[in-house]
Image 1 (cartoon, rainbow, N blue to C red):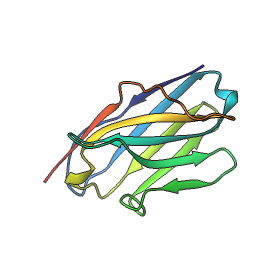
Image 2: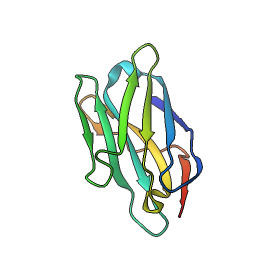
Image 3: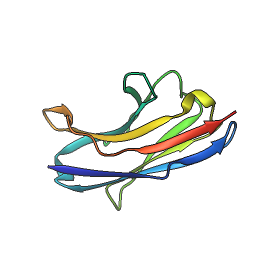
Image 4: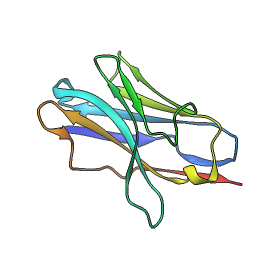
Length: 118
C-alpha cells in the first residue's frame, strides 16, 4: 500500500504562485508514476498533471505552460509548481500514484485547498 500526504495549498491572488508537495510512503517501489488531480466545488475531480518515473510528464490543457510537476528522487516526493494562477484554478488538489499493473489508486487523501482570488 502507498500512503500520500499533500501540503502547500493556500490563498493567493491571481497571477501568483504556489508549490504543492506530495510525500509518499509505504510500497513506493511498486509505483510507476505520481500525479495531481483537483476538484472544484460542484465539479468532478479532474486530472492536472503526472510524472512518470521513466521521465515523461503529462499536463491537462488548462494548466499546460503554467504548472510544472517534478520529482525529488532522493525522497518519494512529487511537487507541483503552479504559476500564473487563475481564479478557475481554485480547487482541492489531490495527489495520487500509479501502481504497477493496476493504474491510479482508488483511494484519496484529504487533499490541499488552493484558493485564487481575483
